[in-house]
Structures are given as C-alpha cells and as structure tokens.
Image (cartoon, rainbow, N blue to C red):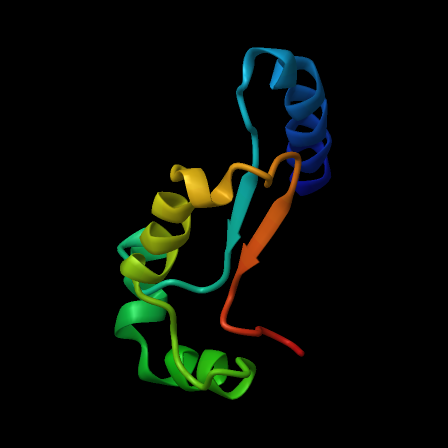
Length: 93
C-alpha cells in the first residue's frame, strides 16, 4: 500500500502541475495518538522501544506532523512536489 501511495503521489504531481497544484505524501513515524488503541501513547514498554529506535529519542506528537503539513501548504514549500516526506524523528537510522 505504501508503494502505491508513493506512485500515486508522483503521478498526481506530474498530472496536476500544469494547474499549479503540488502533491506530496507525508509518512509519519510513531505518533502518540488514539491509533491502534493508543498503544504508542499509553503502553510504557512500547513507548520505550520506540524511543530506543528513534534518533531524536522520543515518541512523536501530533504537532510534529501538523507542522510539516502546515509548512507544505505555504509558499515556502512552492518547489516541493511529488515527494514522500518521512516525519519519524529518525526512526531506525
């Protein structure tokens, strides 16, 4: 599925570029949310494992992803299209 999203992102970026539309995919790492029953947020052992595998040494927060998405919507990101942007805090580096 991830490969399909990346391919679709590139295809749409190419097809929609003539209309000034940029298309990117944001690929978040482990984020402390309700997803999967809140395991990343609520399970101490799982959280410790994620921290150990992340270069920045912590679990991501929703604002870590929101900031990237907000940036992509600005004119400062006008030259970014067709990209998969991993926002994982350096997971498994």
